[in-house]
Each structure stands twice: as structure tokens, then as C-alpha cells.
Length: 305
Figure 1 (tube, rainbow, N blue to C red):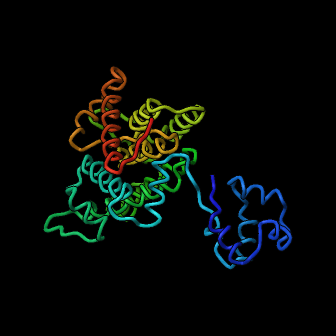
Figure 2 (tube, one colour):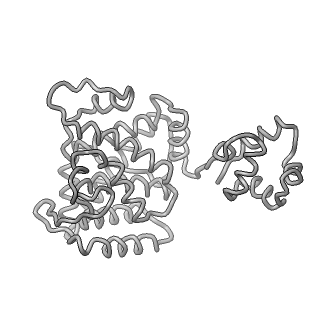
Figure 3 (cartoon, rainbow, N blue to C red):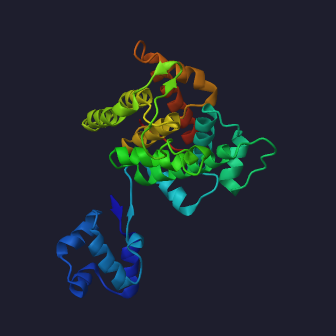
């Protein structure tokens, strides 16, 4: 749904009604009806109105989400609110997800980077740990902006690019930042999909997932496990996979889950034992939902999902 509050304000300041606008610009009454219903206008129409009102098209409307968590995050992101839900999600998700993959940064250092764009790192902090923390912040921003769009290969590859660009890995010609792996890899002693098989496996996974009309938390957990077992990228699969799960929870109005670093052994066991016992990973992710609910409680947010 779209809000045209700014458009209404500009029209009032100019002393004209929406009906007057149809005569001034030669646009249809159907377009005006779309504004009243909060429906999306074409880029051409938005540009025409923006030119008339001397503003930018992006100023005229904004997306209003039916998901109260996502809407709250978008508002706080837009206003750069400090100390809110957006702030805490960025810090806690970046710290836990990166630390599970070997980052040496503490939660306090992660928080300092987010809040001040500086760090008192001391000696021995790898540059990539700092870069990938900043990149994780940008990846969550991307998810907040695109949460309600269908999950696609291009969107998944963009998350990988956001996380891994400018790192040491990106200097390797074969690493393929933002694209599927070129070399076979093994995770926890288990084979993953061969590079030649990855494109077909990913297309099949996405087609099956996107064919569902009503996604549940179990569907998202299943997709997450299937994604991790394909392991489509050379590195960064865990972080990308958890970001995808975050996005899809937002998309389907489901309370997301944060896997805490302290629970990583249960999480990895759940992925490893998925084919034999799905309860391990499911229980760990549901525990991560409880972690997110406690975060919502801090900001007096209630949810039924």
C-alpha cells in the first residue's frame, strides 16, 4: 500500500484539489482514484506530477507495509532514529551472524561501528571483520527496502555482493563475488552442490518455494536448510542464508529469528542432521524467534505471529 500524504500537502499548499490536478496535467480520474486507494502510480505519472509540484517523484509517495515490524523498521531507518528497533536489529543481527562465521569483533565493537562509524579496534582486528560488519548493515537496509518483493536469484546474489565486495576474497579472480561459486567446497565434512549443478539447483529451489501461496515459518526454515546444503557461494553462505530468512519473515509477516552466537552449536547440528531429524534446526530457529520477540518487547511491540 502507498501513502500520498506528501502529495496531499503539496496540493493544499498550492491551493488545488486532486480534481484540479486532472485538468492541469491531463491525467485521468482513474489515476486520482488510485491515489485515494493507496495504489501504485506509474513512474511516468509520478514524474509528471513531481515536475508540476517542483519536487522529486520519490517524495510524493511512500510504501506503507501491512507488517507492523517492517513498517517500524522503515520509519526508523528513514529518520535515522537512534536507540530504536532498527538500531538494535542491525547491531544484534550483524554481531551474531558474523561472529558465528569467525568474526573477532565483539558486540560492543559492532555497536560502535554502527553508531559512530568508528572503532577502537586495538591490534590484530582483521580489516575484513570491520568491512563485513559495515556491509552487513547495508545488507539489512537492502532487505528492509525490498522485503515484500518475491525472492529471486538476482536478489540473493545482490545480498552476497553487498556482504563480500571490497573484502580480501573479492581480490581473488575465481571467488565470484555476487555470483555462484566456481570451485567445489565442503562444509563440516559434507559435500555441497557441485558448481556446475548450482544454477539448476537454485532455480529448482526457488521455483518450488515461490509456487507456495502461503508461507509458514517451517517453509522458511526448510528453505534455509536446503539453501545451506546447496551452498551456492564460495563463502558467506551462512550469512546470506540467514539474511534471506529475515527477508522472507518480513515478507510473510512472520516474527523473524536471530540465531545467537551462543546457540551456534545447536544451529550447526540442526543443519547437519536435517535429513535425519528436522526438529533440531526447527527448535533452534523457534528459539531464535523467542529472541526476536524479547527484542520487540523492549519496544512495546506486540505480534500475533
